[in-house]
Length: 198
Image: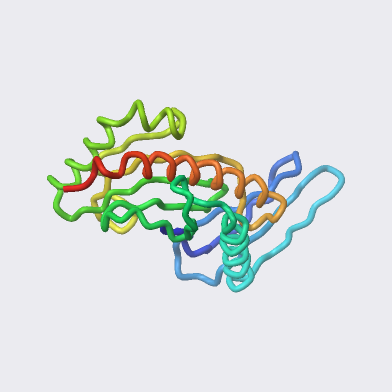
């Protein structure tokens, strides 16, 4: 399992008439500031996080998720490191992301040989009905796309909007989202990984 969190360079826009949290992220080499912002006709305040504080909150969340998942066995009844999930296939990974008020979990295929990557993506496609029975239908299938590092990957993913990893009140919902989908992916993988052996 790869836990992916981009650097949190941010600015705040405190402009809504309804209380809300707004964090806008962008990768620039400037001093980072992250705001938890609420604005209403009666009150206005901004809570600013330094780069170090934001990094600490990220670390605390993934540690909390790991501890929460620790007692849960795999579908095969074995103890498992959920945060660093091992599929046994070098270029097939389960990736968790929490950034920009979006929680996302995906299966990523990163084979440098494009024909091989297509082969494995098609294997998943052949098992799509079984996959959806295990994890649900709200997953996006993308073949041969370019990621933020300019590398070609294929990806099967699902996400939930409106969850901010810097807001601890969102952590229960984030943990619930990741737990549900990790356990479902594990069930699918344990029952079907033999199909990906070559």
